[in-house]
Amino acid sequence: MNFTTTVADLIDDPQRVIDRTSARELGWAGVFGYLLGAFSLFTFLRFFSAVPPGACSFIGILILVLGVNFFFASGIHLFLEMTGACGNALKLFFLLGLTELFWSVLIPLGFMAKLDYLSPVTDFLLCFIVIVVARISVIRRLYAISRSKALLSISMPYAAILAGFFMVFTYAIIYLIWLIV
Image 1 (tube, rainbow, N blue to C red):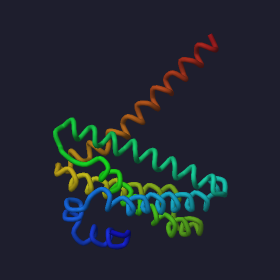
Image 2: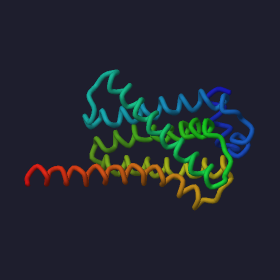
Image 3: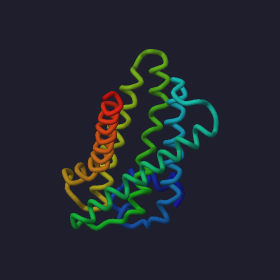
């Protein structure tokens, strides 16, 4: 399957595509989704000079996107396997890559934000919410679980990152107090 037929079939009948295609068939479409999503994110950030220009910045964003999504796919799969839902982690990783295609909406929204019609933060949050909703839909179909369990599985990696941030913040405050005293 090439990219366009995979995306077209996924739009037409998502349950059939998720059930009947192998992870190998979804592979190139998922990788292309990651590439296009990272490029769109890079372009949006370049509109507002948030990242330096060049291939190294794009590769850094691509590696960050792949790493975060690999962490999310593994955390979601681990949580769902521990709760008794059966699924495929590699297929989940590639389907998360297809949901990354929604970042491509950031480019026209970035043009509108550059013309002061919209806010860049609002554009980013809008795309982020659309991606989370799409991921909930993909997880529900892949693992055959309820919407609330899919939402819980999506929120677990975010909760882990937030807990890590708070732990580092607390240790930093304690370290600063220890330096002063």
